[in-house]
Amino acid sequence: MDHLSENLRRTPLYALHVELGGKMVPFAGYQLPVQYQSGILKEHLHTRAAAGLFDVSHMGQATLSGDDPAAALETLTPAEVKGLKEGQQRYALLLNPQGGIKDDFMVSRLKGEPTLHLVVNGATKEGDFAYISERLKGRATLRPHIERALLALQGPAAGAVLSRHAPESEQLIFMDTARMTVGGAPAIVSRSGYTGEDGFEISIDASDAEHVARALLGEAEVLPIGLGARDSLRLEAGLCLYGHDLNEDIDPVAAALTWSIGRRRRETRDFPAAARILELLAKGPREKRVGIKPDGKAPAREGAEIADKSGRVIGRVTSGGFGPSANAPVAMGYVETAFAREGTEIDLMVRGKALPARVASMPFVPHRYKRS
Amino acid sequence: MSETRYTDQHEWVRIDGDIATVGITKFATGQLGDVVYVELPEVGRKVGQGGEIAVVESVKAASEVYAPVGGEVSETNPALHEDPSKINADPEGDGWFFRLHVSNKGETDKLMTEAQYAEFTKSL
Image (cartoon, rainbow over all chains, first blue to last red; front, side):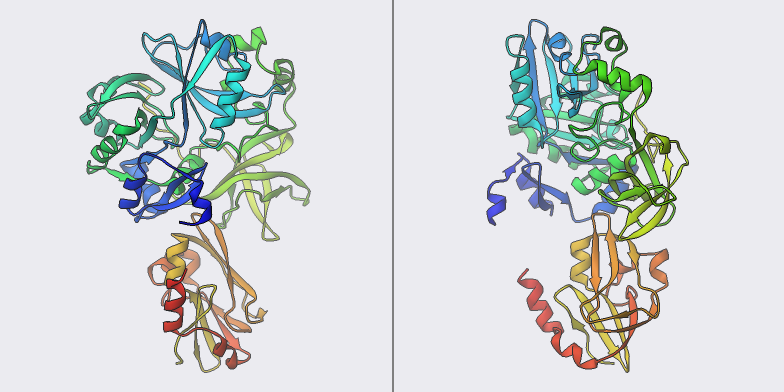
Protein backbone atom coordinates (compact mmCIF):
# COMPACT_ATOMS: atom_id res chain seq x y z
CA MET A 1 0.00 0.00 0.00
CA ASP A 2 1.43 3.37 -0.94
CA HIS A 3 1.73 6.33 1.34
CA LEU A 4 -1.30 8.14 -0.03
CA SER A 5 -3.74 5.29 0.30
CA GLU A 6 -2.85 4.82 3.98
CA ASN A 7 -4.83 7.97 4.71
CA LEU A 8 -7.82 6.91 2.69
CA ARG A 9 -10.87 5.42 4.32
CA ARG A 10 -12.70 2.34 3.18
CA THR A 11 -16.44 1.95 2.93
CA PRO A 12 -18.10 -1.17 4.42
CA LEU A 13 -18.10 -2.63 0.89
CA TYR A 14 -14.34 -2.31 0.26
CA ALA A 15 -13.68 -6.07 0.33
CA LEU A 16 -16.61 -6.69 -2.00
CA HIS A 17 -15.35 -4.11 -4.50
CA VAL A 18 -11.94 -5.79 -4.58
CA GLU A 19 -13.54 -9.23 -4.91
CA LEU A 20 -15.61 -7.97 -7.87
CA GLY A 21 -12.49 -6.66 -9.63
CA GLY A 22 -13.10 -3.00 -8.85
CA LYS A 23 -10.28 -0.67 -9.86
CA MET A 24 -9.88 1.27 -6.64
CA VAL A 25 -9.06 4.98 -6.74
CA PRO A 26 -9.02 7.79 -4.17
CA PHE A 27 -12.28 9.76 -4.14
CA ALA A 28 -13.62 12.10 -1.46
CA GLY A 29 -11.15 10.67 1.05
CA TYR A 30 -12.17 7.07 0.35
CA GLN A 31 -10.94 4.20 -1.77
CA LEU A 32 -13.76 3.56 -4.22
CA PRO A 33 -14.04 1.67 -7.51
CA VAL A 34 -13.79 3.87 -10.62
CA GLN A 35 -14.95 0.85 -12.63
CA TYR A 36 -15.25 -2.94 -12.46
CA GLN A 37 -14.15 -5.42 -15.11
CA SER A 38 -16.85 -4.58 -17.65
CA GLY A 39 -15.64 -0.96 -17.91
CA ILE A 40 -17.26 2.46 -17.76
CA LEU A 41 -19.03 2.34 -21.12
CA LYS A 42 -20.77 -0.98 -20.45
CA GLU A 43 -21.57 -0.03 -16.87
CA HIS A 44 -23.15 3.20 -18.03
CA LEU A 45 -25.25 1.57 -20.75
CA HIS A 46 -26.24 -1.29 -18.46
CA THR A 47 -27.58 1.13 -15.85
CA ARG A 48 -29.83 2.79 -18.45
CA ALA A 49 -30.91 -0.61 -19.86
CA ALA A 50 -31.42 -2.63 -16.65
CA ALA A 51 -30.06 -1.73 -13.22
CA GLY A 52 -26.80 -0.76 -11.55
CA LEU A 53 -25.71 -0.88 -7.92
CA PHE A 54 -23.51 1.96 -6.65
CA ASP A 55 -21.69 2.22 -3.33
CA VAL A 56 -22.21 5.82 -2.20
CA SER A 57 -21.32 5.19 1.43
CA HIS A 58 -18.78 8.02 1.29
CA MET A 59 -21.67 10.47 1.35
CA GLY A 60 -22.54 12.14 4.64
CA GLN A 61 -25.72 11.06 6.39
CA ALA A 62 -27.03 12.82 9.48
CA THR A 63 -30.11 13.44 11.58
CA LEU A 64 -31.13 16.95 12.56
CA SER A 65 -33.23 17.17 15.72
CA GLY A 66 -34.58 19.96 17.92
CA ASP A 67 -37.78 21.85 18.71
CA ASP A 68 -38.25 22.77 15.05
CA PRO A 69 -35.38 21.42 12.95
CA ALA A 70 -37.06 22.51 9.71
CA ALA A 71 -37.25 26.14 10.81
CA ALA A 72 -33.64 25.96 11.96
CA LEU A 73 -32.44 24.44 8.69
CA GLU A 74 -34.28 27.09 6.69
CA THR A 75 -31.84 29.68 8.06
CA LEU A 76 -29.13 27.96 5.96
CA THR A 77 -31.06 27.03 2.80
CA PRO A 78 -33.61 28.68 0.50
CA ALA A 79 -35.49 25.39 0.12
CA GLU A 80 -38.99 24.85 1.47
CA VAL A 81 -38.21 22.59 4.43
CA LYS A 82 -41.08 23.40 6.81
CA GLY A 83 -43.57 22.37 4.14
CA LEU A 84 -41.85 19.06 3.52
CA LYS A 85 -44.51 16.40 4.10
CA GLU A 86 -43.90 13.18 5.97
CA GLY A 87 -42.43 10.59 3.65
CA GLN A 88 -40.94 13.16 1.28
CA GLN A 89 -37.43 14.04 0.24
CA ARG A 90 -36.26 17.30 -1.32
CA TYR A 91 -33.16 18.69 -3.04
CA ALA A 92 -31.71 21.72 -1.25
CA LEU A 93 -28.72 24.06 -1.34
CA LEU A 94 -26.61 24.86 1.70
CA LEU A 95 -25.65 28.51 1.32
CA ASN A 96 -22.84 30.47 2.94
CA PRO A 97 -23.69 33.91 4.37
CA GLN A 98 -22.80 35.54 1.00
CA GLY A 99 -25.27 33.30 -0.84
CA GLY A 100 -22.57 31.08 -2.36
CA ILE A 101 -23.30 27.37 -2.62
CA LYS A 102 -21.54 25.54 0.20
CA ASP A 103 -23.04 22.22 -0.82
CA ASP A 104 -26.09 20.61 -2.34
CA PHE A 105 -27.91 17.99 -0.30
CA MET A 106 -31.07 15.96 0.19
CA VAL A 107 -33.37 16.54 3.15
CA SER A 108 -36.17 14.19 4.09
CA ARG A 109 -38.83 13.79 6.74
CA LEU A 110 -39.73 10.26 7.69
CA LYS A 111 -43.24 9.30 8.67
CA GLY A 112 -43.98 9.86 12.36
CA GLU A 113 -40.50 11.22 13.11
CA PRO A 114 -39.84 14.75 14.35
CA THR A 115 -36.30 14.82 12.96
CA LEU A 116 -34.94 15.50 9.48
CA HIS A 117 -32.63 13.12 7.64
CA LEU A 118 -29.85 14.78 5.60
CA VAL A 119 -27.55 13.37 2.91
CA VAL A 120 -24.65 15.65 1.91
CA ASN A 121 -21.68 15.19 -0.42
CA GLY A 122 -18.79 13.00 0.70
CA ALA A 123 -15.99 15.46 -0.04
CA THR A 124 -17.71 18.24 1.91
CA LYS A 125 -19.35 16.34 4.75
CA GLU A 126 -16.99 17.22 7.60
CA GLY A 127 -17.15 20.92 6.72
CA ASP A 128 -20.92 20.84 6.23
CA PHE A 129 -21.57 19.08 9.50
CA ALA A 130 -19.31 21.47 11.45
CA TYR A 131 -20.95 24.47 9.76
CA ILE A 132 -24.52 23.30 10.32
CA SER A 133 -23.81 22.37 13.97
CA GLU A 134 -22.16 25.72 14.66
CA ARG A 135 -24.80 27.82 12.89
CA LEU A 136 -27.74 26.02 14.46
CA LYS A 137 -26.26 25.80 17.96
CA GLY A 138 -29.04 26.10 20.56
CA ARG A 139 -31.76 25.48 17.96
CA ALA A 140 -31.01 22.07 16.53
CA THR A 141 -28.59 19.20 17.00
CA LEU A 142 -26.89 17.41 14.14
CA ARG A 143 -25.91 13.79 14.61
CA PRO A 144 -23.77 12.36 11.78
CA HIS A 145 -24.36 8.68 11.03
CA ILE A 146 -20.84 7.47 10.44
CA GLU A 147 -22.04 3.93 11.10
CA ARG A 148 -24.35 3.92 8.09
CA ALA A 149 -23.71 2.79 4.52
CA LEU A 150 -25.56 4.09 1.45
CA LEU A 151 -26.30 2.07 -1.68
CA ALA A 152 -27.92 3.37 -4.84
CA LEU A 153 -29.87 1.02 -7.10
CA GLN A 154 -30.58 2.80 -10.39
CA GLY A 155 -32.12 1.96 -13.72
CA PRO A 156 -35.41 0.90 -15.30
CA ALA A 157 -35.28 -2.53 -13.59
CA ALA A 158 -34.54 -1.06 -10.14
CA GLY A 159 -38.20 -1.10 -9.10
CA ALA A 160 -38.72 -4.75 -9.99
CA VAL A 161 -35.42 -5.77 -8.38
CA LEU A 162 -35.96 -3.96 -5.11
CA SER A 163 -39.56 -5.16 -4.77
CA ARG A 164 -38.21 -8.71 -4.42
CA HIS A 165 -36.22 -7.70 -1.34
CA ALA A 166 -38.40 -4.87 -0.06
CA PRO A 167 -42.03 -5.19 -1.23
CA GLU A 168 -42.94 -1.88 0.42
CA SER A 169 -40.62 -0.05 -1.98
CA GLU A 170 -43.34 -0.43 -4.64
CA GLN A 171 -45.37 2.19 -2.75
CA LEU A 172 -42.75 4.90 -3.29
CA ILE A 173 -42.75 7.36 -6.18
CA PHE A 174 -39.98 9.81 -7.10
CA MET A 175 -38.70 11.70 -4.03
CA ASP A 176 -40.68 9.60 -1.54
CA THR A 177 -38.86 8.10 1.43
CA ALA A 178 -39.73 5.52 4.07
CA ARG A 179 -38.28 3.11 6.57
CA MET A 180 -38.58 -0.54 5.56
CA THR A 181 -36.53 -3.69 5.61
CA VAL A 182 -34.36 -4.59 2.62
CA GLY A 183 -33.33 -8.23 2.59
CA GLY A 184 -34.26 -8.31 6.27
CA ALA A 185 -32.08 -5.32 7.19
CA PRO A 186 -33.68 -2.16 8.59
CA ALA A 187 -33.28 0.60 5.99
CA ILE A 188 -34.29 4.09 4.99
CA VAL A 189 -35.22 3.92 1.32
CA SER A 190 -35.82 6.91 -0.94
CA ARG A 191 -36.87 6.78 -4.57
CA SER A 192 -34.23 9.08 -5.98
CA GLY A 193 -30.73 9.04 -7.35
CA TYR A 194 -28.06 10.64 -9.48
CA THR A 195 -28.50 9.05 -12.90
CA GLY A 196 -31.76 10.47 -14.28
CA GLU A 197 -33.23 6.97 -14.10
CA ASP A 198 -35.82 5.53 -11.77
CA GLY A 199 -34.11 4.10 -8.73
CA PHE A 200 -33.52 4.10 -5.01
CA GLU A 201 -31.04 5.13 -2.38
CA ILE A 202 -30.85 2.67 0.47
CA SER A 203 -29.40 3.72 3.81
CA ILE A 204 -28.46 0.77 6.00
CA ASP A 205 -26.25 -0.04 8.93
CA ALA A 206 -22.64 -0.67 7.88
CA SER A 207 -22.87 -4.18 9.29
CA ASP A 208 -25.72 -5.01 6.87
CA ALA A 209 -24.16 -3.40 3.81
CA GLU A 210 -22.38 -6.39 2.32
CA HIS A 211 -25.31 -8.73 2.84
CA VAL A 212 -27.75 -6.32 1.16
CA ALA A 213 -25.33 -5.50 -1.68
CA ARG A 214 -24.75 -9.21 -2.39
CA ALA A 215 -28.49 -9.86 -2.39
CA LEU A 216 -29.10 -7.10 -4.95
CA LEU A 217 -26.09 -8.09 -7.06
CA GLY A 218 -27.47 -11.62 -7.09
CA GLU A 219 -30.34 -10.43 -9.26
CA ALA A 220 -29.85 -11.03 -12.99
CA GLU A 221 -30.57 -7.39 -13.91
CA VAL A 222 -27.98 -5.87 -11.60
CA LEU A 223 -24.31 -5.06 -12.24
CA PRO A 224 -21.99 -3.19 -9.88
CA ILE A 225 -21.24 0.30 -11.20
CA GLY A 226 -18.20 2.44 -10.44
CA LEU A 227 -17.53 6.17 -10.12
CA GLY A 228 -16.70 6.59 -13.82
CA ALA A 229 -20.16 5.62 -15.02
CA ARG A 230 -21.72 7.44 -12.08
CA ASP A 231 -20.16 10.63 -13.44
CA SER A 232 -21.15 10.09 -17.09
CA LEU A 233 -24.70 9.14 -16.03
CA ARG A 234 -25.17 12.25 -13.90
CA LEU A 235 -23.68 14.49 -16.59
CA GLU A 236 -26.09 13.15 -19.23
CA ALA A 237 -28.89 13.73 -16.71
CA GLY A 238 -27.77 17.37 -16.34
CA LEU A 239 -27.11 16.96 -12.62
CA CYS A 240 -24.43 19.03 -10.90
CA LEU A 241 -21.27 17.67 -9.31
CA TYR A 242 -20.30 19.72 -6.29
CA GLY A 243 -16.75 21.13 -6.44
CA HIS A 244 -16.96 21.18 -10.23
CA ASP A 245 -20.30 22.64 -11.38
CA LEU A 246 -21.04 24.23 -8.03
CA ASN A 247 -18.85 25.97 -5.47
CA GLU A 248 -18.90 28.75 -2.87
CA ASP A 249 -18.39 31.45 -5.52
CA ILE A 250 -21.49 30.38 -7.42
CA ASP A 251 -24.98 31.45 -6.36
CA PRO A 252 -28.23 29.53 -6.95
CA VAL A 253 -29.32 31.86 -9.77
CA ALA A 254 -26.13 31.48 -11.82
CA ALA A 255 -26.30 27.73 -11.15
CA ALA A 256 -29.81 27.63 -12.68
CA LEU A 257 -31.06 25.97 -9.50
CA THR A 258 -33.69 28.58 -8.65
CA TRP A 259 -36.36 25.85 -8.76
CA SER A 260 -34.90 24.75 -5.41
CA ILE A 261 -35.84 28.09 -3.83
CA GLY A 262 -39.23 27.66 -2.17
CA ARG A 263 -42.08 29.94 -3.26
CA ARG A 264 -42.82 30.98 0.32
CA ARG A 265 -39.12 31.62 0.89
CA ARG A 266 -39.12 34.23 -1.90
CA GLU A 267 -41.79 36.10 0.06
CA THR A 268 -40.31 35.70 3.53
CA ARG A 269 -36.78 36.50 2.26
CA ASP A 270 -35.26 34.79 5.27
CA PHE A 271 -32.44 32.69 3.81
CA PRO A 272 -28.73 33.59 3.53
CA ALA A 273 -28.10 36.59 1.25
CA ALA A 274 -31.80 36.58 0.31
CA ALA A 275 -31.77 40.22 -0.82
CA ARG A 276 -28.85 39.64 -3.18
CA ILE A 277 -30.17 36.34 -4.54
CA LEU A 278 -33.68 37.68 -5.15
CA GLU A 279 -32.22 40.71 -6.91
CA LEU A 280 -30.21 38.39 -9.16
CA LEU A 281 -33.36 36.41 -9.77
CA ALA A 282 -35.22 39.55 -10.85
CA LYS A 283 -32.42 41.14 -12.90
CA GLY A 284 -30.73 38.05 -14.25
CA PRO A 285 -27.30 36.70 -13.30
CA ARG A 286 -24.01 37.77 -14.92
CA GLU A 287 -23.39 34.20 -16.01
CA LYS A 288 -25.43 31.06 -16.10
CA ARG A 289 -24.96 27.30 -16.07
CA VAL A 290 -25.90 25.73 -19.40
CA GLY A 291 -25.68 22.44 -21.25
CA ILE A 292 -23.24 22.27 -24.17
CA LYS A 293 -23.10 19.93 -27.15
CA PRO A 294 -19.93 19.96 -29.26
CA ASP A 295 -20.73 19.74 -33.00
CA GLY A 296 -17.94 17.22 -33.56
CA LYS A 297 -16.84 14.10 -31.77
CA ALA A 298 -14.06 15.47 -29.58
CA PRO A 299 -15.04 15.82 -25.92
CA ALA A 300 -14.25 19.03 -24.03
CA ARG A 301 -13.23 18.43 -20.43
CA GLU A 302 -13.57 20.42 -17.24
CA GLY A 303 -11.54 23.63 -17.41
CA ALA A 304 -11.83 24.18 -21.17
CA GLU A 305 -12.49 27.84 -21.98
CA ILE A 306 -15.65 28.79 -23.84
CA ALA A 307 -15.33 31.56 -26.46
CA ASP A 308 -17.77 33.42 -28.63
CA LYS A 309 -17.34 33.32 -32.41
CA SER A 310 -15.01 36.34 -32.26
CA GLY A 311 -12.68 34.46 -29.91
CA ARG A 312 -13.53 36.37 -26.73
CA VAL A 313 -13.65 34.12 -23.66
CA ILE A 314 -17.22 34.06 -22.31
CA GLY A 315 -17.11 31.13 -19.92
CA ARG A 316 -15.70 27.75 -18.98
CA VAL A 317 -16.61 24.09 -19.04
CA THR A 318 -17.17 22.69 -15.54
CA SER A 319 -18.00 19.08 -16.50
CA GLY A 320 -17.47 17.42 -19.83
CA GLY A 321 -16.83 14.12 -21.48
CA PHE A 322 -18.39 11.51 -23.68
CA GLY A 323 -22.02 10.60 -23.08
CA PRO A 324 -22.41 6.88 -23.87
CA SER A 325 -26.22 7.02 -24.13
CA ALA A 326 -26.18 10.32 -26.02
CA ASN A 327 -23.46 8.64 -28.14
CA ALA A 328 -21.82 12.05 -28.37
CA PRO A 329 -19.67 14.36 -26.31
CA VAL A 330 -21.64 16.39 -23.75
CA ALA A 331 -20.67 19.12 -21.31
CA MET A 332 -21.97 21.70 -18.92
CA GLY A 333 -20.45 24.99 -18.00
CA TYR A 334 -20.97 28.65 -17.27
CA VAL A 335 -21.37 31.33 -19.94
CA GLU A 336 -22.23 35.03 -19.84
CA THR A 337 -26.02 35.25 -19.72
CA ALA A 338 -26.23 36.79 -23.21
CA PHE A 339 -24.90 33.48 -24.57
CA ALA A 340 -27.07 31.18 -22.46
CA ARG A 341 -29.91 30.77 -24.93
CA GLU A 342 -30.36 27.26 -26.35
CA GLY A 343 -28.80 26.92 -29.79
CA THR A 344 -26.26 29.74 -29.33
CA GLU A 345 -23.10 28.91 -31.30
CA ILE A 346 -19.94 28.93 -29.23
CA ASP A 347 -16.41 27.55 -29.40
CA LEU A 348 -14.75 25.26 -26.88
CA MET A 349 -10.99 25.73 -26.61
CA VAL A 350 -9.40 22.28 -26.56
CA ARG A 351 -5.64 21.83 -26.99
CA GLY A 352 -5.37 25.28 -28.55
CA LYS A 353 -8.09 24.64 -31.11
CA ALA A 354 -11.61 26.09 -31.25
CA LEU A 355 -14.15 23.27 -31.37
CA PRO A 356 -17.57 24.48 -32.55
CA ALA A 357 -20.39 23.72 -30.11
CA ARG A 358 -23.89 24.84 -29.21
CA VAL A 359 -25.68 25.67 -26.01
CA ALA A 360 -28.11 22.81 -25.46
CA SER A 361 -30.99 22.06 -23.15
CA MET A 362 -30.45 19.56 -20.36
CA PRO A 363 -30.89 16.75 -19.59
CA PHE A 364 -29.04 15.30 -22.57
CA VAL A 365 -30.91 12.02 -21.99
CA PRO A 366 -34.55 12.29 -20.78
CA HIS A 367 -35.19 11.69 -17.08
CA ARG A 368 -37.22 8.56 -16.43
CA TYR A 369 -38.32 9.07 -12.84
CA LYS A 370 -41.37 7.24 -11.50
CA ARG A 371 -43.66 10.17 -10.92
CA SER A 372 -46.93 8.30 -10.33
CA MET B 1 8.88 -6.41 -41.44
CA SER B 2 10.91 -5.78 -38.33
CA GLU B 3 9.94 -6.82 -34.84
CA THR B 4 7.62 -4.61 -32.83
CA ARG B 5 9.28 -2.19 -30.42
CA TYR B 6 7.74 -0.41 -27.44
CA THR B 7 8.13 2.91 -25.61
CA ASP B 8 7.82 3.63 -21.91
CA GLN B 9 4.81 5.81 -22.86
CA HIS B 10 3.05 2.65 -24.12
CA GLU B 11 3.24 3.19 -27.86
CA TRP B 12 4.29 0.39 -30.21
CA VAL B 13 6.05 0.78 -33.55
CA ARG B 14 6.67 -1.67 -36.40
CA ILE B 15 9.00 -0.73 -39.27
CA ASP B 16 8.56 -2.03 -42.83
CA GLY B 17 11.07 -0.54 -45.25
CA ASP B 18 10.99 3.22 -44.57
CA ILE B 19 7.51 3.15 -43.07
CA ALA B 20 6.74 2.89 -39.36
CA THR B 21 3.26 1.91 -38.18
CA VAL B 22 2.38 3.25 -34.71
CA GLY B 23 -0.31 2.52 -32.16
CA ILE B 24 -0.83 2.19 -28.42
CA THR B 25 -0.30 -1.03 -26.52
CA LYS B 26 -2.82 -3.44 -25.05
CA PHE B 27 -1.51 -2.45 -21.63
CA ALA B 28 -2.30 1.21 -22.45
CA THR B 29 -5.87 0.42 -23.52
CA GLY B 30 -6.33 -1.56 -20.31
CA GLN B 31 -5.31 1.51 -18.32
CA LEU B 32 -7.35 3.97 -20.42
CA GLY B 33 -10.54 1.98 -20.63
CA ASP B 34 -13.02 2.48 -23.46
CA VAL B 35 -11.63 4.83 -26.11
CA VAL B 36 -14.28 7.26 -27.39
CA TYR B 37 -12.26 9.65 -29.54
CA VAL B 38 -8.86 9.90 -31.17
CA GLU B 39 -7.20 12.99 -32.61
CA LEU B 40 -4.80 11.98 -35.36
CA PRO B 41 -2.08 14.12 -37.00
CA GLU B 42 -2.41 15.60 -40.49
CA VAL B 43 -0.57 13.77 -43.26
CA GLY B 44 2.71 15.56 -43.93
CA ARG B 45 3.29 16.63 -40.35
CA LYS B 46 6.90 16.19 -39.23
CA VAL B 47 7.67 15.00 -35.73
CA GLY B 48 10.82 14.18 -33.78
CA GLN B 49 11.24 11.06 -31.69
CA GLY B 50 9.19 11.50 -28.51
CA GLY B 51 7.19 14.44 -29.89
CA GLU B 52 3.47 14.80 -29.18
CA ILE B 53 1.63 13.54 -32.21
CA ALA B 54 -1.89 12.35 -31.31
CA VAL B 55 -4.45 12.37 -28.50
CA VAL B 56 -6.55 9.47 -27.32
CA GLU B 57 -9.63 10.08 -25.21
CA SER B 58 -11.30 7.46 -23.09
CA VAL B 59 -14.51 7.93 -21.13
CA LYS B 60 -12.22 8.91 -18.24
CA ALA B 61 -9.63 11.29 -19.66
CA ALA B 62 -7.52 12.55 -22.54
CA SER B 63 -3.96 11.21 -22.99
CA GLU B 64 -1.15 12.30 -25.30
CA VAL B 65 0.42 9.90 -27.74
CA TYR B 66 4.13 10.42 -28.55
CA ALA B 67 6.01 9.46 -31.70
CA PRO B 68 8.18 6.39 -30.97
CA VAL B 69 10.48 7.44 -33.83
CA GLY B 70 10.86 10.69 -35.76
CA GLY B 71 9.57 11.18 -39.29
CA GLU B 72 6.81 12.54 -41.50
CA VAL B 73 3.22 11.34 -41.21
CA SER B 74 2.26 9.47 -44.39
CA GLU B 75 -1.11 7.99 -43.48
CA THR B 76 -3.63 7.84 -40.62
CA ASN B 77 -6.07 5.04 -39.84
CA PRO B 78 -9.38 6.19 -41.36
CA ALA B 79 -11.41 3.59 -39.45
CA LEU B 80 -10.69 5.13 -36.05
CA HIS B 81 -12.83 8.24 -36.46
CA GLU B 82 -15.91 6.17 -37.17
CA ASP B 83 -15.15 3.45 -34.67
CA PRO B 84 -12.57 4.30 -32.00
CA SER B 85 -13.51 1.09 -30.15
CA LYS B 86 -11.20 -0.70 -32.64
CA ILE B 87 -8.38 0.59 -30.46
CA ASN B 88 -9.68 -1.44 -27.51
CA ALA B 89 -10.62 -4.43 -29.64
CA ASP B 90 -7.29 -4.81 -31.46
CA PRO B 91 -4.77 -2.22 -30.23
CA GLU B 92 -1.73 -3.76 -31.89
CA GLY B 93 -3.52 -4.62 -35.18
CA ASP B 94 -6.63 -2.91 -36.65
CA GLY B 95 -6.35 -0.21 -34.00
CA TRP B 96 -3.14 1.32 -35.42
CA PHE B 97 -3.03 5.14 -35.34
CA PHE B 98 -0.78 6.40 -38.14
CA ARG B 99 2.23 5.67 -40.36
CA LEU B 100 5.44 7.67 -40.66
CA HIS B 101 8.23 7.96 -43.21
CA VAL B 102 11.05 7.25 -40.80
CA SER B 103 13.98 9.66 -40.80
CA ASN B 104 16.40 7.48 -38.83
CA LYS B 105 15.73 3.79 -38.34
CA GLY B 106 18.46 3.65 -35.71
CA GLU B 107 16.06 5.36 -33.31
CA THR B 108 14.30 2.05 -32.68
CA ASP B 109 17.46 0.81 -30.93
CA LYS B 110 16.51 2.98 -27.94
CA LEU B 111 13.10 1.29 -27.67
CA MET B 112 12.12 -1.82 -25.74
CA THR B 113 11.70 -5.28 -27.20
CA GLU B 114 8.50 -7.18 -26.50
CA ALA B 115 10.16 -9.07 -23.64
CA GLN B 116 11.60 -5.88 -22.14
CA TYR B 117 8.24 -4.13 -22.40
CA ALA B 118 6.51 -7.06 -20.70
CA GLU B 119 9.01 -6.77 -17.84
CA PHE B 120 8.50 -3.00 -17.74
CA THR B 121 4.70 -3.20 -17.45
CA LYS B 122 5.00 -5.82 -14.74
CA SER B 123 6.98 -3.32 -12.67
CA LEU B 124 4.21 -0.65 -12.94
